[in-house]
Image (cartoon, rainbow over all chains, first blue to last red; front, side):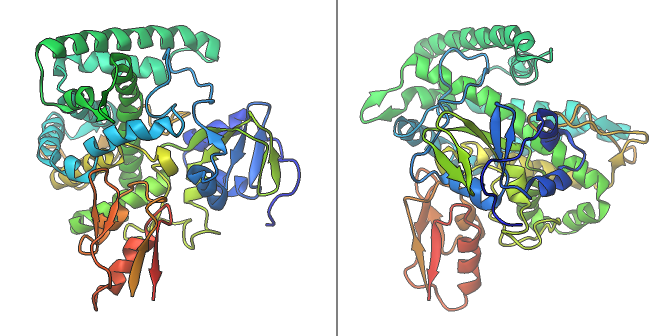
Length: 397
Length: 63
């Protein structure tokens, strides 16, 4: 199909939610790619093709803003570094990127192995589990608490504020706002207390390194540290849960691929990249145009929001041949599941360690499993996750 | 064969040095550092793998 010309076609918001919640969003992505841009009411513009998504993410000309995206996440100040635009954005990434660099994250592997084994131990013998509740939810939260040097007893508190911010009760934004605000207040109070304690009792965990972080000889303020921690809860906990849910649901339903990685663990790193590409647990990311622009011929006015559909860019077979099927050994695989440009997911290397270790250790103990009989998978909207993932496997594993 | 790195484009995805650690390394930020000027004989496929997996097209090959 030719690049679009003129006004973008209209699309209903309901169709957009199916990019996350559909059992198989690839069909919808394919249909959407027939037009480079879809207008969703007066809410935003959906950008569907790899080339356009890639260019907008890279944003070499400073045409797009994150800070202008009006997204209520219960926060009273911009989240750092996500909701900060260049050039200030660079200052924060200079402090944070080294803390999340692959070599640093590799040092966590033994601890992640221990946490994964502990979780698998709780259900392996029984022959069944709700993978979502019993594994995908607690693992990233435990890793986060360990990394930040926060008490493991606070697990439930973190999970409840995270859910109230990302998936609050209620349907409309107005109904959801009070939950988000209350959860936000809890987060600020929690970190205020912990930052005060750290001043009396210094530690050597990641929180301490953020507190000690300097750019041009200047320390971060307490508020800046809190705004970073707030983002970590939202961006760091749920997305790994989503990825684990998506990947294990795929492997439960595709035994040939599962057996392929059980037989040869050396393909786990490339399998992780491929299943992230295929599932795109973060289906789309928002930006706001700061000037009048055109995307593949479709006019976008200054101030309008665009949603860059990472999922559809990742399966765009016009850009990458064979992108419409799963190949666990795919190479090259320059996917955009972690976004791109200056906002490339800060925690991507931590996520990779968690996903690789989880897949390896789980399958060493439980190589054969399937969806529990009668299971109908229900994917969430927004970020692509599952409400439940009941798995059945031979008892006594 | 040479590898060219556009440091302005690199965003630290880390695909190159995880796939071809003999040719690429990372700095403190996790951004790419080239380890060789000339790609050694026999390492051409690794070089292409590192280059082609970069989601930012920060890497390229000069024959």
